[in-house]
Image (cartoon, rainbow, N blue to C red; front, top):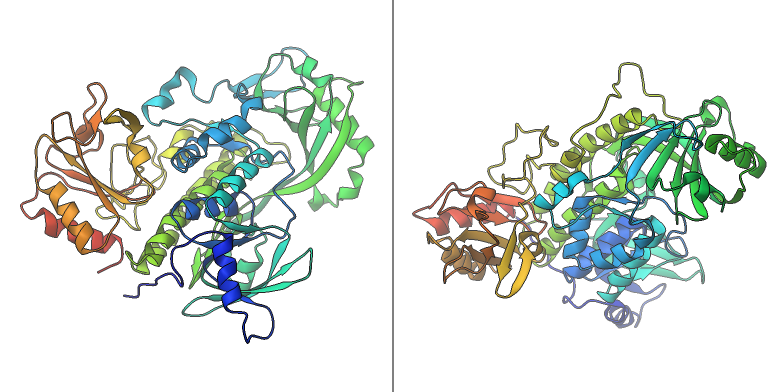
Length: 572
């Protein structure tokens, strides 16, 4: 069993990293070498999320991104409830909601031949009808475009000490048994920087040069369809849309289909037009005149004012890397998986990749977990991507996404259980003990009752005068929940093991008695909600997933809990 410690103390921030560079300059020819525990390649949503999550855990890191800044395109706007839970715990949920205020009242998905008249149908009117989601989560979906979301993540990542460098391109890297040596280049000055990292996280997009160099293949059907994203201004379109506050409207006119998305509900819009390069159609054919005419026909207003402000091709695909890990290098986000954009599953899956990987890297770097824990990143996240990408393609068929012609017999009927995909997915294998490996990764029905491998239940509790969700407890440590009304030794065992094994393990007694640390609100039964009898215990990982639960009291609670911790953390 090999435990890796950080190459330097857990001091974060650009200044600390630069100090290490300066310390190595003396007597060295060539570019200085910067030593850092984690190198992140790619500074879009997933790379920035990785920086944020590592920063929250106190892991020094360097992020390099070849582009000059954050995204300028209004895309990737759907942040699902699980992603917003992660942002809540990371302290950025409110900032994201503020950045998303313009589209806060946009909820449904409309499908119509044109926007003139009343023809058409709502595929759904409200993403959370009746407010039922509050039973499961303290958060909700949030419609925040990538160009608005990334600056929020960047601000917080840098505030936490993240060394984020734009206009900086990875030129080469070489991994060995002890770390990764890389060379990056400033695209502004041409200066080269040598980097020595314990680990590299590749969040460098669907054409990932890192993945290509590693020779990691991909599975899946490949390209699904192609679109050209057109940003445009139109003041008259708001009058045509009226009070229909949709997330997206699929316009289905046979000679001018496409997807219309509001940017500000007033004059800025996005239109996804089908593109067929397989038939020889070129991007040069998408002239401003053609695009303006296409949008007018799709909307149904021949003289609509349309000013094209940008064009960007994009490709929908269904591919998953055959491995998420190669030694000291990990894939995350689009470098690990591509999926149809319908439902925004791809970006959410990528952000959740980052969260899963961040706590595991922190645990290994801090020395309280073995290297085997890092293998569970692939074991847990790759099956989720495979199941989710299949659901995304099926949802595109259901919505008749412009340009997508699903293969005959591939389905396309109404897709239910979308909340299962967003919130109810499971880890049948990985850093869990006692998980049912016969349960599908995405179950048919939503079950958040505390089973090992599932996201721990949300429960409002009181901690002194503070009202929190149980999900707010899970970020920087393992957490053990046990029964205050029926002491069974779990609480005391957790305290002793935290000291003995040098673990960040917090223990809370649940109930309403004088010994309770957390008191559930109302008549909520914490043990029933977590699927364990009175006298039992539930162990929750830093990412909020249940690592293990006890069916009840145990005469040797300490030995049992020790075995669980050693197994789950790769220490045995």
